Image (cartoon, rainbow, N blue to C red; front, side, top):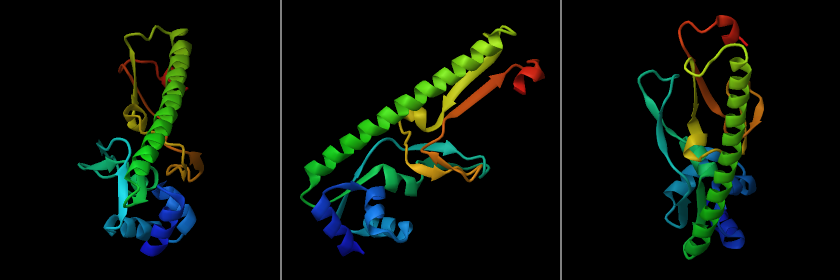
Length: 178
């Protein structure tokens, strides 16, 4: 598999792990392992890594993006001698991720302001509600790679928008349930 990957990278130039997987196919984790252990494949990182709490694993955190998502979306692969091209590809991927993050942040902001405006027309909320944007968006790490949404099983376009809304204890339940 390593020889096949190297031929592809020599022929096509640097690619993300996901782009390599599209060409090579097969088991994605085996591809990740092969690339990670290869001394002939040069890998360039893109973006930020951060530790996040995971409610599915009480008391533990996890890295975000996940190791596999990081490989597919935020890792550029190339061959020795392609370092300049790898760096340029990393910069292009980074710009794309920043643009996706900006668009998703704008959507989250407009969603929150619309909701706040709607709620405020019924009840002054300025000191009663707090909106928090969290997750990939705030780290400029949002992506637009199709993936199955864990909660629904449906395909979605990239990372989700984590919006947390905190209200006072005496906030009307009828407004919370909308």
